[in-house]
Length: 124
Image 1 (cartoon, rainbow, N blue to C red):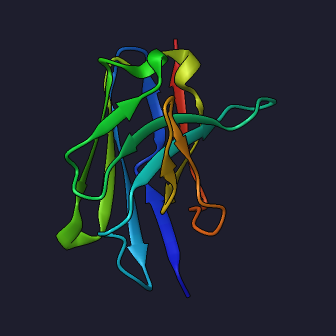
Image 2 (image 1 turned 60 degrees about the horizontal axis):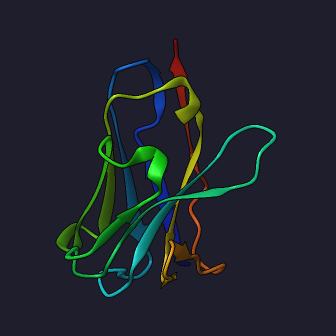
């Protein structure tokens, strides 16, 4: 069974950092574009970051530009989201997605490949 497993979430103070990981199991995702999304309580899931299959192209939503960095290690079948200068408004459940499509403004997720999510809570 194909799975994406997120980890690395937790509690951080404003201004702090966390590093999320998304590991693929059951198949390799090294040839797939990947995306990170988040969903705050009571809000819709929103796009956060995109990375191409090679890692050569990345894209971020405006609210995280300059603070978050997406990267990947295809040998480990893992994608990362380094989150620095965290703000309380970054509090959400973070999800990774595989095999979606880069659009002109963000990344259209593939409904077949979602992880279970990891909670990030940023205190002020």
